Length: 232
Image (tube, rainbow, N blue to C red; front, side, top):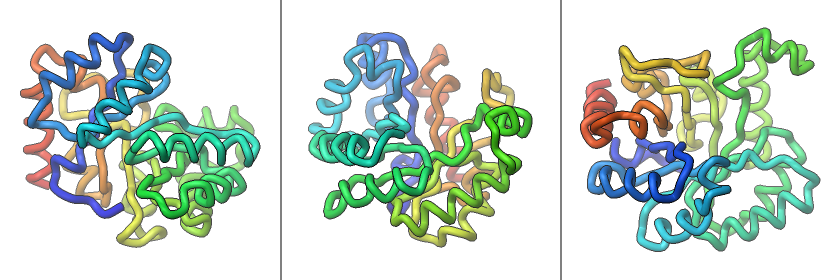
């Protein structure tokens, strides 16, 4: 997926507990934001129907489901997600899972994203999970596997975006969560980068959740982040 304008490259995470709050955030950001991420929290509170509604009106939706299951289950899930009109979908970067998803999405416009290492995880977390690689090495290994599987993009920390971009080339999406404007709270994110640095590192799309949806003036914060992205 090729990156468009900076507005197309900012994805706001609707990480809110209710559909009412999500609808309010979208109204407040109308005209500034055109791309939203919907994950588990909102999905299980009516967010899937909301995603369909937004997509039918031309809004881009990143469905952050991080699929991982047996091949047939993943494939059938992807087939239905294609019918929903979603723009992006995440799945964990297991080679068999990625190949099944790519085949199921073939011929559609759905951009499949490989989740490499969660940005809430540091080296000790990766060791505790049983991996022999440090986070950076694991991200690069999974990026290579995603490229060979025919995936549309990678999800990684912006700290790794430059190295990932060298592996996947110019055409794959490099989507980076864990974006925090200067002075904002890191929350549970451990590998964070500012919006401008993420763009300079080669990110095609930036996912920003709490710094925007948790702000008193969401519109102003989103506009400030877009300005910083354009200055990169």
